[in-house]
Length: 346
Image (cartoon, rainbow, N blue to C red; front, side):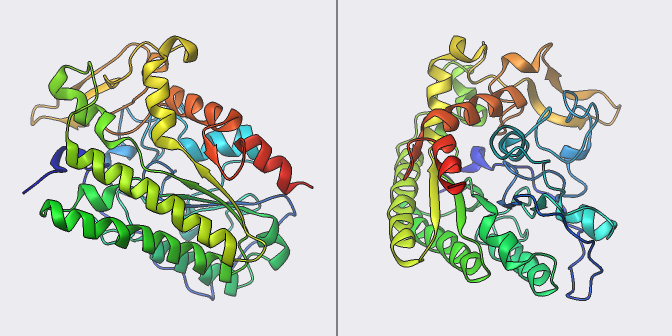
């Protein structure tokens, strides 16, 4: 029984980034707080090659052309880097592989659009991304002091569920597997020297444009299985993080309540200067054209009024709203993201 067919978080993509060896030449680093990113298209800033994210109209708000971000502009990585950490958004890992003189003074983004913790769409998993990071640590790219002070974002948003085609019972077996693999990735990062973790709950799979389309973009989709998987994943991940904090000495974890944050925004649009909760700005097959070159999508006049950019990804305005909520609440294990960051500085 196919349940998540409309909820694949990104288009199937072709991965062509080369693997990094420990012999890669690495530039000398500065001593600012570094930011390392792992996950999928909600955090990717250019690691997923030959995809719609590198085609018009992606990037029309920032940087004015496609840049590999699955949005009209900034994704959460960029917003957190600039507004919370006050560092430059780290370069995509693919950029370093193409040009070894790329500055990594602000950290590195290993997130891959379409990925999960299993081989959701045949793309590099969270564990593979951690291996890339491990190779750079062992090559001397980052010092133990860098890693102890650095912030690590782990953003896994449901591709494992979106790619899965099975029975309801098997979904319930998949959820703990996905959560266990997120925990495994975090423990591997901890063993390499990471101590400060931002971890996000799932995207609200039932409230994405792809799920709300049947209602004419008027309401969240109604699917008890999706709702059950969503709540089970978020609950089990929270419980796993409690154990992680208890057993990984010196770890600092903040659990970003993404599901609740996006739903809150959708119910309180004027508070965030938005007008469209569900309808995406790029409505249809975004960035796709027919044989004659005509677009298979309709583009809105102002992306800044839409929570979502395309069928599954928030707009830059949407991400600004989400991170604003994190900064003032919508977190666990800390009153807010700002309070968590302040605690790291003491």
